[in-house]
Image (cartoon, rainbow, N blue to C red; front, side, top):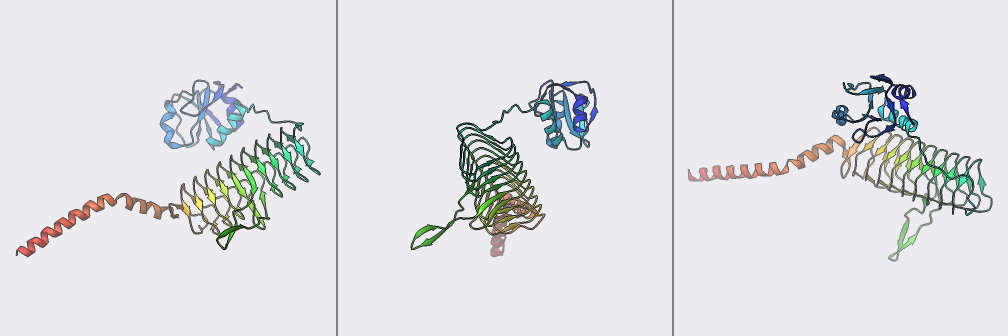
Length: 346
């Protein structure tokens, strides 16, 4: 779709600096862009590319100095503005399933909402409920008594087991399993005996769950994912975990059982948390950290074991300087020996 720079600025409530009549035909990253594309700058480290990118126009923040050679749109939030431009210039061409495919298997008492779409070879067990305009792609399994909200989008080969509650506008990507048994065993006479996991999973509205995520059902009550939380690929969430609203859980995070995560928490890639701890609202845990104790609200933790961020940075600096300190100690030891020898000679 072709749009002038002026039309794009109006759509994203931005300010054009330069030629507003430039025609934009595509969107791209600032490194990869070519003539006719619009790109954006959200990370200051890419500022030097403003003058070298081949893009015809750039979306920048109101605090960024515009390049002399390019037309720009100034916006409050360049990343969000660019996301809107993508929908405007390059609308998605994905054709979602429509209607009920004849190969779908529906159990007794299944309720399908208005305009719900069920793809090929989907299995929906007894008494499950699918909301209005929900879309379920091929090969999915929906367990008995599970409820899926309006406008949910569930991609191929997702398994949702029994008695799970999924809210409105939830997106679940391929390969994810929701409601699998929690990892609970008791050792008796040297053998591990399974503890029944009879709880459920509850997922709030506007949650997005990446590919190959596993969310275990609670032992008795609920494993909960709060409204607006976004979960990346390959995340493991154990039984009875409670995650608050608007959290970001990045790839390969593992959260052990009964841990409580507050609202607006960020867990970066490969963070691991032990069970039965809490992470307060607005806390941030940096990548590859191992969290063994509770984290207070608003704190930033890093490292293994995870510690306050600045404390962890100091420790890294000390470790980095160990070779220099070792050489210094060797030099001081040599000087001390020389002094001792001189004293002996006297």
